[in-house]
Amino acid sequence: MPDRPLLLWFRRDLRLDDHPMLTAAVATGRPLIPVFILDPETEALGAAPKWRLGRGLEVFAETLQGLGSRLIFRRGPALDSLRALIAEADAAGVVWSRAYDPASITRDKTVKAGLREGGLLADSHPGHLLHEPWTVETGQGGYYRVYTPFWKAVKDRPLPDAAPAPKALRSPDTWPASDALADWHLGAAMRRGADVVARYSIPGAAEAERRLADFLDGPVDGYGERRNLPAEAATSALSEFLSLGEIGPRRIWHAAFRRMQEGSPGAETFLKELVWREFAWHLLYHSPHIATANWREDWEAFPWRDDNPDAERWRQGMTGEPFVDAAMREMYVTGRMHNRARMIAGSYLTKHLLTHWRVGLRWFEDCLTDWDPASNAMGWQWVAGSGPDAAPYFRIFNPATQAEKFDPDAAYRHRHIAELTRHPGALALDYFRAVPKSWDLAPDRPYPEPLVDLAEGRARALAAYQRRDTAAQDG
Image (cartoon, rainbow, N blue to C red; front, side, top):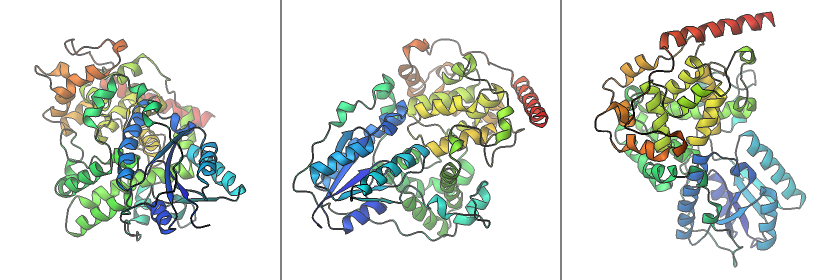
């Protein structure tokens, strides 16, 4: 029955081009019903990612309306919601883009099995990554645990072109009922911070395309040298769009690859960063425990501290280390944090404060608009030393010397810390407008003294590593 509609189950793929699922669905000639389901897995998102998802869905729904279609919203367990929609629309089945985190894999297997048992079509498609995780193998048939060999394995692999967006979507004769997106209150947990972060976050595929074009028109040339300078606009700023699939990875790859062929000196470095994201998903798929437990078992003996008052000062951007505090405040105001700053803030928490990386991982999960489960887990375990391809245990970033090297004129620190400058700007002041009132912070109060002497903190961390090695040997 070729006129029975298909449900297009959108998740983290809120775009029209470079979209294998959508391209395949259009090719069937069937009427198409785009749907988004607020299931328990999505309900579990942190405050900022959920707020950013809501804004992305608003834009995507408007985009679909421009094609003569619409986005149907439903709330509840995925299989139950899809079955109800199939019954209401007399649909032939459901198609979707694959996800690779453990919770999504479990959900999607349940959905696929449940629908197929009922004789319904249930197909998944690639689209979130350049390469499916199971297609990249070592010579021994296993998965890669180190980035450089992974990069060498994929850098010359051919990739299909990014398919163009469809010009129209065939609509069904009647549409099923839809929840109102506004009734979901996806930004509720952001409280007063939502209005602040909204000034620095523009959702949607059109903005993603603009940023990619602007980046490739200039900053990419100096990317290799300038990407570590947090005060400069030297990066692509595409992470939040990639997180929600508002731009496809193949589109980015092909555009940057062309710039590399044209002679851009920074384009290859940028491509390597795109593949670093790919590597994080490769690891999460093949070793899902990386999201919750030390990837290296010998780190179970490390004397991490659980949450503690020092960690709260870290969360508040009040450690007394300006580079660390600037990073934490940047995240709270903009929803993003420069990558160099992430390394410094993460190293300080896990090494100078000896606090478990999971404490930081959970805070980033709540505060980042570009939150990505694979990159977040990989990044934290890398900087803590407990993950694959990790920084050596003795690499303890010194925030002061890092600031001298990467923020030599203190522009980044002054941009985000009101207490360090006589005339603070909007970014610095917005921090105090966004934070919870219960923190009782104000820009006219003295900047705090450092929580720990950096040399003493380094020595304490190295001693803890030594005790870990001794305990591991004795065990």
